Image 1 (cartoon, rainbow, N blue to C red):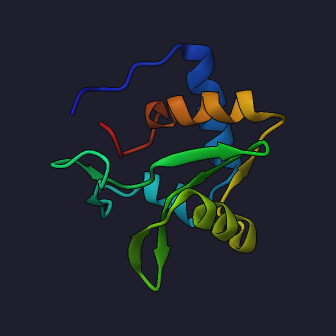
Image 2: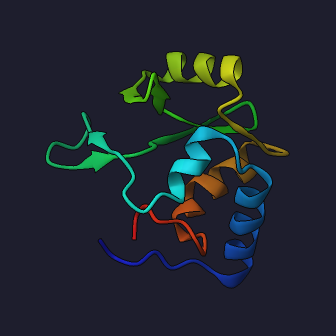
Image 3: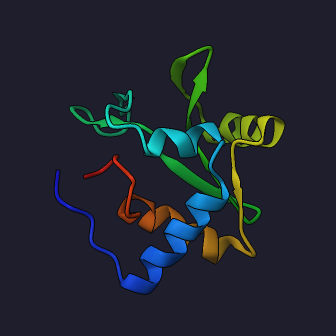
Length: 114
């Protein structure tokens, strides 16, 4: 997989956001050396670990860990799951959340996508 390159300022923001949200399962999975993945239903032949979405100023994964097994949820179910369980990161607005979802793989210690 190609190394993710992002601007230094954006990397600092990503690193800061991730550090502030350690303990959330989907964030912790970003730092695991051998993160579990599941097949991507939208892109045959590819796998995924998170598949991030944004709504109402939060970034949340569509791939969630339920009973130690990764499950792919549709958009509505993923949003409901995030709100119910706290599996999301809150931002000032959707634009900031989108920027994070586009750059999170570029975090200094993030293992996925590298």
